[in-house]
Amino acid sequence: MPVPDVRPATEARPDALLELVHSARKELVARGESITSSWVEEAANDLKAGRQVGWTIPGRGLAFASSRPTRTFAHVHVADDSDDVEVAEALLAVLIAHFGTLVPRLESGVSGLSEEAESTLAERFLRVPGASILLRARMERLVPPALPGPPLADPPGFERTSVRSIPVAALAELDWRSFQGTPDERLVADTVEEDRQSLEEILNGRIGRFLEEASCALLRDGRELVGGILVSEHDPRTAVVLDLLVEPSERRKGIGRFLLLWGLRALTALGYSSVRLWVTEANRPARALYDSLGFSVSGRSRIFRYEREGGGSAAHPQTAA
Ligand SMILES: CC(C)(COP(=O)(O)OP(=O)(O)OC[C@H]1O[C@@H](n2cnc3c(N)ncnc32)[C@H](O)[C@@H]1OP(=O)(O)O)[C@@H](O)C(=O)NCCC(=O)NCCS
Image 1 (cartoon, helix red, strand yellow):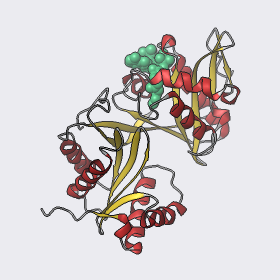
Image 2 (tube, rainbow, N blue to C red):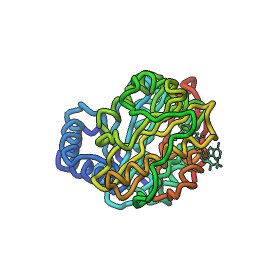
Image 3 (spheres, rainbow, N blue to C red):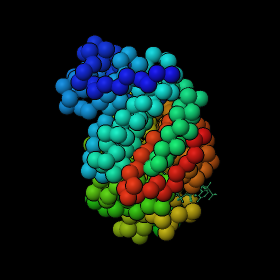
């Protein structure tokens, strides 16, 4: 198999670049991600102008990336239903070669491959020193029809309040602490400050309209924050749970289940017909909670993670599934 011809995106023909970006968006939208159609032209222009770093294998694949001090976020797309593992492998290799020494960690999603081809890619990727993979499941369920009877009572000793009544810094502190020690501890943020920024993005509707009425925070004795659920709109019929957290010392007391059930009831009242979320397969407590509440897996994706030596090792590396 000849080594695919990887070139900087700045050297690509504009129409070919547009086609590759369009194909990547199509695939990501089919997976349920919210990406506006205007993004295609903007991204293609930015890649051509070098404002966004990227590479292409003409007509066959595309990689693009953006960095912050702690890590680079990237995406690799294989075009045209070719299912070409070599294309994805070559693009991941160029990302590692470029960013591996610049930033402690690189994380890339991959699209355009069948489940079987992505699994083969994962096996090969794991041979690279510093590589690990987070396997993520998209889970969905229908929003239940309205049930007769009183609304769900707050658990004894706890009281619900609106998320916006809590200072974002306090929410971030609990969010950060809640994920430490789980397989997702560095999924969203590497510091409390990054966690705060990502919560602000949710609250400001950057990931879909924030559904304040289906989101809440839970206080103990009316003042101490112990949990919360953040829900946004994916489309007018579908909501997405973007965050669910419970203070570590209050776990296994039914709070997570209460928050999710409360959110489901609120979504019924708001008229949504289904709800989805993403969970890391190795996050057993969360996965078990979602299973027990009737969510089922509707898709999977992997985060291909590379950490340079001394950049920290993956806390819970998984094998390719
Ligand atoms: C996931 C999380 C919200 C669960 O909160 P919780 O209040 O401890 O959950 P509950 O007590 O309501 O548990 C409800 C059910 O979930 C499952 N579950 C919860 N924790 C579990 C664990 N440690 N092991 C196995 N199953 C578990 C069980 O089915 C449990 O029912 P049961 O107690 O009757 O067996 C909590 O562990 C957490 O905050 N984790 C860190 C943040 C996170 O991972 N959020 C989800 C991101 S997708």
